[in-house]
Amino acid sequence: MAFVAAPIFYLLAGFVVLGGVLVITRQNSAHSALALMGTLLAVAGLDVTLYAPLVAGVQIIVYAGGIVLLFLFAILAVNLEHSENDRRFNRMWPIGLAASCGLLASLLYVFTKSKALFPDRMMTLPGSSNVQDIAKMLYGETGRIAEYTLTFEITSLLLLVAIVGAVMMTKRRKIQQPIQ
Amino acid sequence: MVPITTFHYLLVAAILFLLGVMGVLMRRNVIIVLMSIELILSAVSLNLVAFSRMWGNLHGQVFALFITVDAVAQTAAGLGILIAFFQNKESGQG
Image (cartoon, rainbow over all chains, first blue to last red):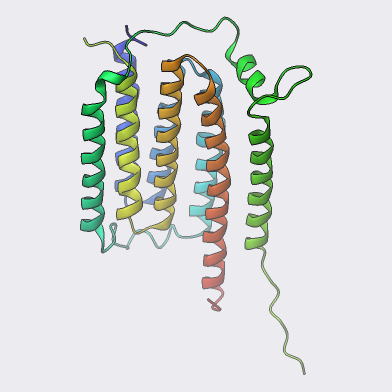
């Protein structure tokens, strides 16, 4: 049984692969950032076809809208003028290519051995809305916490630490005056 | 045409993961290395959502949300390190 119509899947999967290839092969890092945005939007589209609208919406807002913007600001602040003349790939690129081919070989092995494990039947759609179900798993119901509430609190702590760390790292320090 | 199953989504996620690994290992520009790490993370989240659809429960989707949050935190930290490094370099005290 099919999850979704084949042309939609192949179109989105084509955008994912094309965007991924463009990210890792462009000379200009701003072009790579735009290709990354295209890839993340296509992955969000694939999440919509997998009946995960909240994950897709969060990925569009946070990944494509937030992280790519962060990257563009970092490119603006740092190295756009240096990147035109540099060599694109580093000195170790044959070893990186060999390692990637090794990873490809192991992935192909796993896929060919385990193709029978993935069922083809279609799961029934849940009765209520997706956002409510995810909220029940994250926040719990009246009188009890859910199994992911602790993880949710820990991720908020993680975000706080990341924000404080980023601000502290990029503060400009005053140059110490020598004692007369 | 062959019907689209879980396997197709796993293949797309694996290709994206492979492209991300190649970007991390082979590119010289550190911002593009950070972008390739984002590709790896989004490949993992696609994999999780595909399995969540296969099993019919929402655990994979919830964990994909946590992976998104984690990607934000590590991108912010990585870009902070990058900018602090280039601030230090340009001021001549690096």
